[in-house]
Image 1 (tube, rainbow, N blue to C red):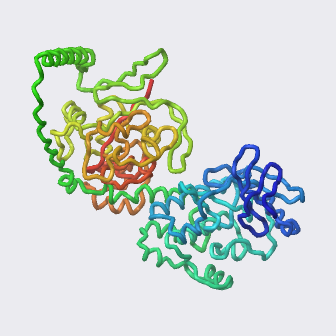
Image 2: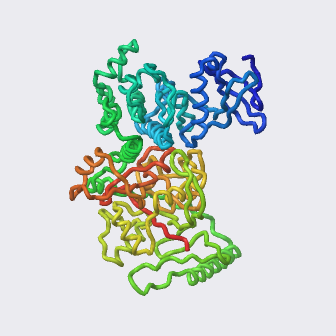
Image 3: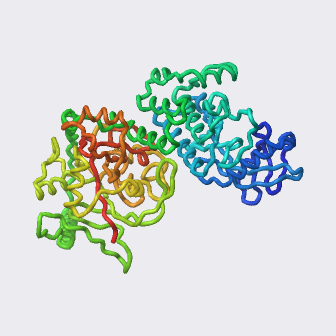
Length: 574
């Protein structure tokens, strides 16, 4: 087609490729949006089955709404009665080119790509749709790392049967045995293809060799999938087991759909960093946690003596400052508690019905996180929460020592009593629960913690989307005071939510078998099967910089303590 050309309100500007259908970059002239227009060719229109499949794709994909599935905006026919569909225009590259160009990143990033694909497939299976052509070319990744599943050209919805007897659809390398033989096609063929694609994503090569379709099909039907390349690439055993399970020749031996696949990938991601960020045994952590000696400050240079008049002015200003401080202390001083329990904070609204933006409690100041919608996670999914308060800082050594004195609870190992402003560490989730109960508070949930850290727009850092090493204690050698780095505050005024110390949150999780084995060695008393596991959020001072630290997490047993693990509290806003 000679360009530029026009179909309805869409101006076709660039040919992008295609076979039986052609795809163009186009401009929606009404709203100014860049889109992709896919048009069935003349040859395609003459093939009744191809045309039926094109129409089926438009209907199926047009009724799918998921963050990881390409969006279909419009559908119609041009002047020559050729059907066309208008799709989301994707920037970036498909997974095939990302693998070839080395753009898939480390193991964590590869698993994040796989998880997004699995979530998309779980969703379309819930819509009774089987994709049947899962391969790297049909997975797109944009510059932000968001994955989109594409091309429903041979997808099959429940009750739709357009395949001629003996006619095989799919890409040979990724076809399940039952897809090769054309018998018993179910959603399990997508599980198999996903497993093959996951192998390729992890290793950079296909698990099946063959120059002809016949040789490829023989291997799929008769030869076990070779996992040697996974082990040679240093993949964890649990990753290898997931690939092996997905690519089992018997559909009944594969995971039953994508819910367990997603759960397995989420568990792998949650525990992948555990050995490096919070796996130091408490005994060895003690020595490593010894605070660095305070830097000696140079004595100030002597200043010229002030004149008599200046001296009197200085004394008068100093006296006034003392008076103001004294009055302020009298008004703001904490009221004596009647018992050893800390009083629950009370929010004092500035106007009737309004919530105070901050409140003072006997265990530290808290800031308000207003109720409403926000974006969370890597994919910026939408959620809503009621208003709540969260501690402005991590719980400090000073606050924890007061709690310990009031309740008789043992202080953490190597507790630095001479550094009251540092966040308390070497505390477990069980310790955090006890403190929160004493303080009349609770621990934040995972979503509450993330909203408090990222605001409503799902930003990468508490202050925005631009990395600034001066605003967070990340990639350093030790803790900083909990009230330090005010320029790194979250949109609500919470400090040090990125880095400094990992923070335990009120969210149970399921660990991977690999994590269980490692913590079984590290925990004393030994890890038990019934031990609960919780998430920790925000990273710590000894993490490397990453724009994933605010939405990412790792999981630890409830009894786990580490030199880089602390917490902060939350409270409902009444």
